[in-house]
Image (cartoon, rainbow, N blue to C red; front, side, top):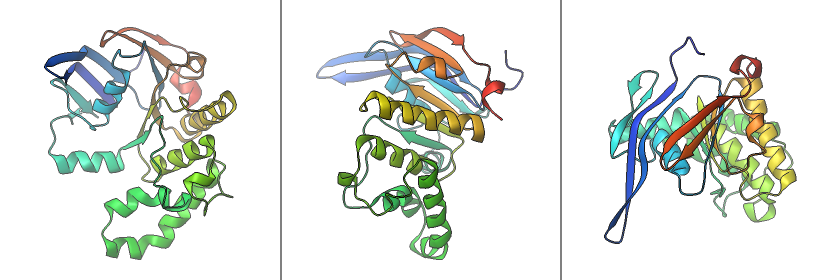
Length: 245
């Protein structure tokens, strides 16, 4: 039971995609509340709408029907520039595929969000401070020895750790992780989850993680089960207060 209001709330979300001439419904009236400091896992069969939910919550896409609120203010219908600002400052994203630019080294890949957001003058003026923050993040995820390496020189686990550092560079309030261990072996997947748990427990980061790996569920605060585009069950595993501090 939570006394506070949710940091993120989805109300009656509907989303469909067109495949040739057919309209394929994915979300069919989904409701969800996420509270600050939670680590929520979202599970369900392939095609039930888990990734679509993450895209809508992070304003990467818009629902056909329904509403999404951040701190009580609606965000799904904001103008493009305001949604861009949310994606740059409020939300961090990790995907199954790492999306690192092959021509940039690890440090440069982590700095990409700032390179995109800032004007050339602001980037130049703040570059030392921003580079130091990126180096500290890469050290936190165990990549301080890989700053100058290109993605082709990194393992899958190292590329995902670089992607986590990139997601954190703008100091987001909410991290959205879509199958973050899906491309990794068991050892590297365990390391990624260890990093996410540390970010949640010791830094208070709110995390929503889609996963098909049910072994990861007990490591989170709460599991949300989806089926046919709606949530069918939610279960608290570890109270939030036990994980944040």
